[in-house]
Image (cartoon, rainbow over all chains, first blue to last red; front, side):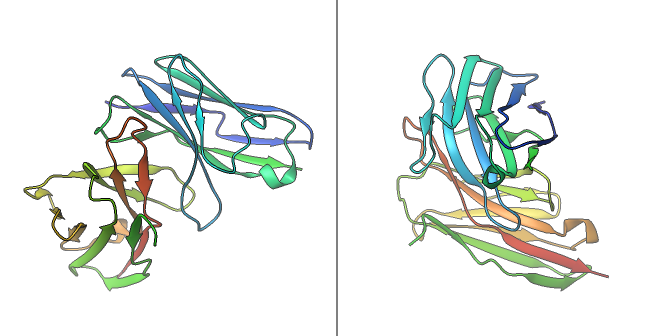
Length: 115
Length: 111
């Protein structure tokens, strides 16, 4: 149980393109989903917390207009990197959680490369 | 001071060794605790939750010391496949319910 699917797993695109990443909880309803990015050999960095039906809460320093998050249902959250540039290249990982106090379950991650 | 601190290692141990990792947290209101493992270029995977009474899952034992605000992970009879980065995770249990991740401890088990 507790499977989280993230798609796509790998994206390579030109600078200026917007990229949409989907995160789905396959066998449970996730009241909260989280979006992280991770640079090589660095720790996870929380970008935003997404609650179904409400606006995402962004961490300090994360531009909400740059990283658009939509959590339209209890099983789907999307992250759109708008007008991506090379410095946005990173490993983006989502996670989903049933309720507070419960562990997060992670998607496989999306490796984004902007040329 | 970081909210969750781990010894980054690396820990290099031979197969069969017993190895222990510690993790300290600063927020005394923290309510739930977990250990994850992350393999290179992969997503974190839940290893085990940590309960106040301590808990064991095969070769892995997790303990929580609320008074001293630390959690530990003990791995017995290390296998080559245990090589990974181990992440300590602490939940505050507030409305935000965010988890705070440690930076991870790297373990390499050698033949």
